[in-house]
Amino acid sequence: MNYSSPTNLLNNKTILITGAGDGIGKALAIKCASLGAKVILLGRTLSKLDSVAQQIALLNKQSAEPIQLDLNGATEEHYVNLAEHIKSEYGYLDGLVHNASQLGKLCKFTEIETETWHEVMQTNVNAAFLLTKQLLPLLQQADNASTIFTTSSVGHKGRALWGTYSVSKFATEGMMQVIADEYNKSSMRFNAVNPGGTRTSMRASAYPEEDTNRLKTPEEILDTYLYLLGDDSLEVTGQRFNAQ
Ligand code: NDP
Image (cartoon, rainbow, N blue to C red):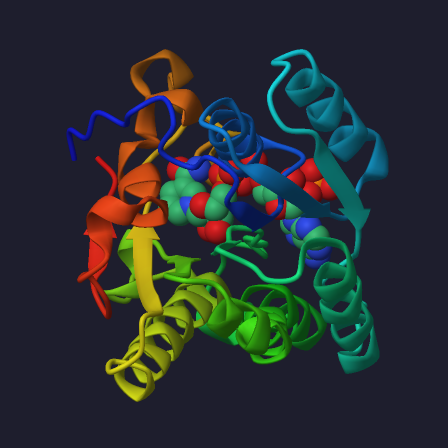
């Protein structure tokens, strides 16, 4: 998508991004802040989140808040507490980007380790369910909240060896469609973005032999996310987008 965002696109919007310490989530967090958003940086490695917050502080726009949470170990209580914190600090939430994911291990279906299966499902699917469930009242409080789920090309068509990750992305797209349909008369919108091959550490784990110079950087694929987070997409819900 070729979308040119106005410099005030996200002025004063509060947006939570999971996996904001690295890769696409990091690039998106910095871009959102540069367009005026207050960004809540959620992730599991505090030092990475702090570093992103410092980069955002240098923009002299809004400050960003790092929140450390390992989506793999988080319980429902963590999400309840998170929602309470956001309510008291910000009042409501304009944007939610489910970006954090784990790849697991690429292997034959019968060789998937049960522990890996549960871990990937916990981070990629269960955490998105719990987070959305607890944050929905805050999204409802905003004028036109936008939630983005992150899918993949293997979330649309199964592929050999992509086992758990592929199944988790099918579930992600299904979750987005169910919620979008339930709230299609509301002002909230729910969509999914497939970033496409992007130069990050996850991509490098999946394709270790690849020439990474041929891949777009996270900074180069953000237009679709920005379109969906800003008010130019108010009527758009229940859809799947390819960022490239
Ligand atoms: P990265 O691995 O570069 O970044 C993922 C981020 O998510 C990291 O900051 C990581 O934290 C965080 N994270 C992972 N697991 C957890 C967890 N349990 N709790 C909290 N945070 C966690 O991935 P990408 O930027 O490449 O991927 C972003 C999204 O895009 C993912 O949903 C991925 O599936 C999707 N995608 C990516 C593609 C690509 O080519 N890059 C292609 C298609 C889809 P930490 O830094 O601490 O490890």
